[in-house]
Image 1 (spheres, rainbow, N blue to C red):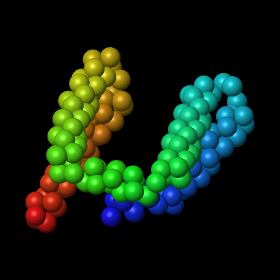
Image 2: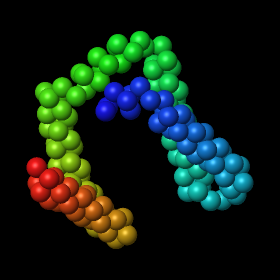
Image 3: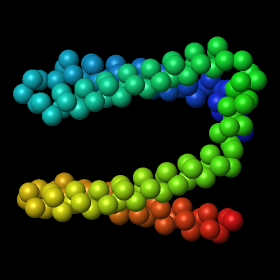
Amino acid sequence: MLYKTIRSNRFWKTLVAIGFITMIFGVVMYKGNPESEHNISMLMGMFSGIGGAFMAIGIVKLIHNKRTPAEKLKQEEIEIRDERNLQILRIANSIANTTATILFGLMAFIFVWLDYRTPAFISIGAMYIQMLAFFIAYKYFNKKM
């Protein structure tokens, strides 16, 4: 199944198209933005950068899929689906999730200390959403298995 997604170019073409649209949106909105609104200019720069990154990743993957023989793509798929690699991925995701939760909490304390209440509430909200997503996924997969 994963072999089909790696081999399929539809996803990467869609990523390139979304990246192109995002980058064009960022550039056009940046040009039409008054210079007094620095935060909007910075946001449009972020849109342009993310669009460019999506385009670059999609193009590199399309070139990789075109130049790589089918047998090697199949070998890559087998390697990705290897049980040991899946276990390593799960461990890494677990560590990243725990680290992100701790950092969201730490950011909330720092924002409150600096008297920035709105960013503190955003950090706490993001932490709660992350923990809620974890518990929902845990319950779902616990029932499924």
